[in-house]
Image (cartoon, rainbow, N blue to C red; front, side, top):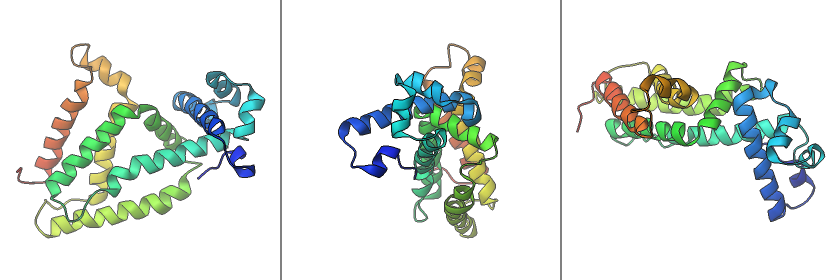
Length: 214
């Protein structure tokens, strides 16, 4: 995980920790809109309400801020998948996973767009994580899905593409939120759209996997 410059030389004070959070919040705003390549330290400093030299005391480079945010996003974004329980009921586990991913799309749209921008640019800063820890986690949960299919609890399916499908359908509501709200119109584009999406996606995946609904 990226370590702020100030933290490398001394124990951080509460004020320093608060300043780092202000910087990272500003960086998240800027990166989620402009992507890594389109963002500048000057933009981040302006949003943070700090001078550029003051900002650089805490984070030496744009890369350091971006990496700190990406590390956070990867940890948070994968938490629902880590919770996917091999001993659980497949229907409950899949429904819970879909809902938790939609909650993240609702609550962390900037983080989702930050990650999407990184992927669109070829994942230059996180390729090792994608091929390492992320792949290992997905491999582990793919085996869970295969075991459910082998036991006759769900229909046979490609577990990787099932996971990809859940990722894409849930994160769509963060990455393409403007489009979703425009198409749904004012009457249906409020916070209830996430509950509507959850009900639809639960039925789509539960029915598609041949799970008998409890």
